[in-house]
Length: 370
Image (cartoon, rainbow, N blue to C red; front, side):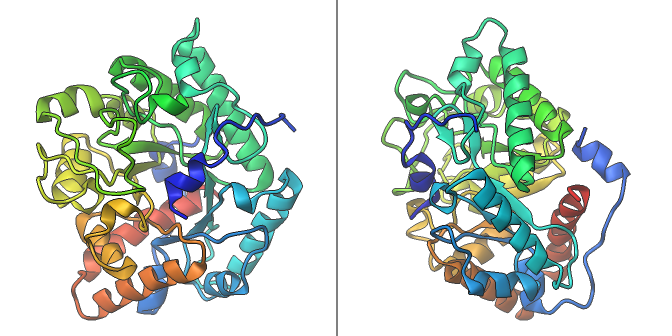
């Protein structure tokens, strides 16, 4: 199952409700990657695993204990109740105590609000409803606080939210699920940064997505299903789609997820998450983001022409992606990514210094969430 298909499965269900910033964290405790890790362990510190069902596979527990996993993403089929997923999170962190990397695992889900909620509970308002409310910033602040407190209550420490996409037309890719605050990039930036500050204030890292933006995508342009090309000028991308990221970065957002769409105005050949031009020049260079970059699902249909899971992992790492999100139905998909990264490190297809820098960003994030 692809990430977005799982994300939107059951997307109309109504659930009953059963100042951590990058700057502040960087000024506090810093943990540098251990120098004694094997290539597989080094690789594992950049991979997020997934699994199906409510029981954690032993293979995943073993990978965590062996130091070959940075974290786990949860979808709706992993969660039967708050108490059940809290027990799972505790078990995963317990397995991690045997790992040579002692920083907490990154345990994450998509708790955007509205239709897209993996955990039973708030925020009940969608981003679109927040953007149309009488006081959008106050509503976004409340939503971020709700999401953060709910995730923290079950032991999760990363939310793959908020969406900063600036939608274009009613019913398009983002708008059909209420996943965009507004057509106005200023509103998206104000609401997104408010959500980020409130959520990170209760110790749950936020993720701004999907850089440089899926707002121009039509209803059927879904990168989970196949390749998507968004023919938007560079000036429009920068003045509209990338505009909300300035406030988000200013708010100290810990992670940025990069999309799998192709943006010919910036890179005519490569999806954004495989493009050094977009990751390094646009996100890190032009916008100055120094936090953790994370891919969208590495098994997405948009990457069908880019090799195996292992090959995609190496290409993403080369482009400058720190964390690789592997959303297969079995941990073996993530293990393939680990093997691919480890082999590329051994044969120097990936440089050690850049690899260590990416690992350091991830490890520092994890340490700051302790």
